[in-house]
Image (tube, rainbow, N blue to C red):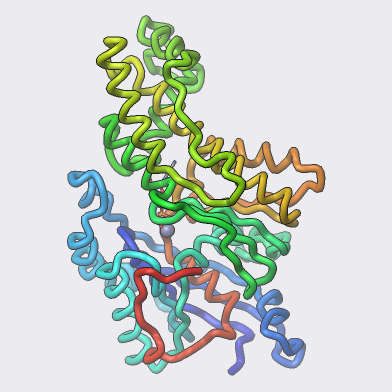
Length: 392
Ligand code: KG4
Ligand code: ZN
């Protein structure tokens, strides 16, 4: 098969975003390629030609979380228009699809659509792990064409790469020695970091999705940054909030920070916030509006301290050439900036890669980019099936 220029339709429906993208994988002529799949993968350039995401946030907001039945139904309604928009006039050469992990009802819509499209158009397929997609989002950059070529926008991965994946469904540290040698060093034993953001936002009454809501609430603790806010104007509320920020009675634990392994646990932190709210309202007689910003900031910082602490421990153990942050929680500005600072303090100066903001939460471009790097795994529609519990 000639893969010198190869267009892939990518489909992603693992949770609550219906997404489709077209990417173009460009390679030197076949005669220039050396034999191993690894070398061929490294020689790929991948350009994102389109990236369409239909979010279901408005559907799930009233439930305070993803309602699986509604998610599958919305995917079924949106998949055709989303794919049509992503394709435009392009006739793809292959179809890549997220086969897991995720919600089975959601996955099945994307997988069955992709298989049907591939069958009807006689196209080969690529099955992509959602987490692999998040990893490759670190190496893509949709802002300047060509989109994934070394110096001109995207990033050629430097191995070994240490990857921190933080999403709503997963939290883990991964060591990537090559495109095909990917090992999980540790993962969450209970809730994912994004799940903790969502649950804590719910109990602080901040709405859904919780990550952006907590980040916005926490930002009020830096009144100079929030123009027009009461805190910015130096009102009484501001002094109360600022007082709270420095107050030891807000301190939350950092579970498993010093556990000596690379696993995480966020469920206890969520419970600690619940007890803290009870204590502040009942024992100290404080109104939630006086401490919610400060508590959101302390919770966010606790999560960041744990994520960065473990990542830096792993960095010293494995001495990676690059450190990458990905997954929905990588949209968090504080996390992006604090990890950047921690990485820049490492004595061997690894590279630091984070996804473009448009590629942090679920999207199909990251699935297409991962597929573009793994063209050697091309297969046929009858070998594709959804797996809700798929591992990396
Ligand atoms: O990767 P993603 O879109 O879906 C999964 O694969 O799970 O991640 C969604 C998660 C949600 O839990 C959401 O609250 C979180 O990412 N998130 C954030 C931010 N934006 C989204 N968490 C913290 N800060 C943010 N700015
Ligand atoms: Zn995701």
